[in-house]
Image 1 (spheres, rainbow, N blue to C red):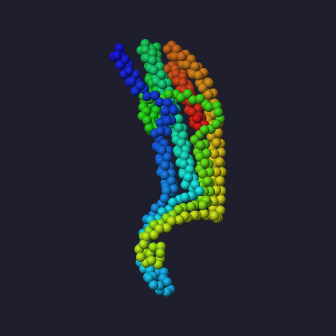
Image 2: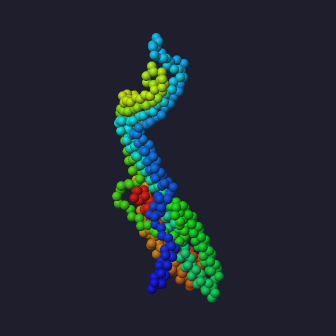
Length: 416
């Protein structure tokens, strides 16, 4: 019993390893994860973290160590000599440790941090927009592979049926019922099918290589591609990443206006200086001495020649530009949806008659088969109807794949 279970497990493992199943959603996820552009979102977040940390250092005290030695041609002197007071030296020395501490700047630092966060979100959303466009390329490759698979299946079936027919014709030629040319016509058609199969195989390999590179995952002939069941959403809402991008761009402008307003508010700093030099703060003491100074400093730009107003007006124009870009995007998107909806309707109509055509071609091919057996028609006549049958089947499968592709593209355009 244990041996049987082991063999079953081994068979399941071998089958699962040989049969690699891929879905359209898998390809989307792998592309978004592995595509080089996807790494930018994390890099932008890291960059923002460093820049935010840099902004926060403005709240910390600033320390500057300064040293100076100088010689000057003249020094300040008194018009009359005084006892115990010596003139200043022309060579002077000074070393200080200066400290500045921000006390109030109207929330300018926090506004800068807020703006940087929104800028990062906007850049990350732009990455999402670019990644969304990759899905269209995946769609084209994925459904082209599905079409190549279906074409190969139909051609293989056609080849099998033709091989069976060649055996019958060979028998007819052997017993003198059919002419030798009948077999040669069928053999030529068989070679043509082999050629088509090879072309289909090479096309599929090219598509597999392109899709594999795009999603950064191995794909080969053993890979099974599932046919997606695409259902169109009934709601008319468009939820593309571009919509969120427009919203973030507007937030960025609002945050920029807030930052501009904060620039006009007063700024208060505490400062302190400790030093050693000759002379010190007492200019009449011509010797090396220590000294210090502490205080508060306020700065308020009460008139900026309407620079703030003009900057805000420029940002308001930018808001109008974004509004027109959004309006244009929505207009173009709705036009694309209408075009694809028309294509979907056309393909659905074509598929309604495809099955009827295939049924009729099957009936005609069956009749031609019987006529060939009885020598009523030639192999060339039979091949005409035989080829028509498989052409109609390929057309039907092509329309099915094209319909699924159109529906999938419709969903992508809506952002679903």
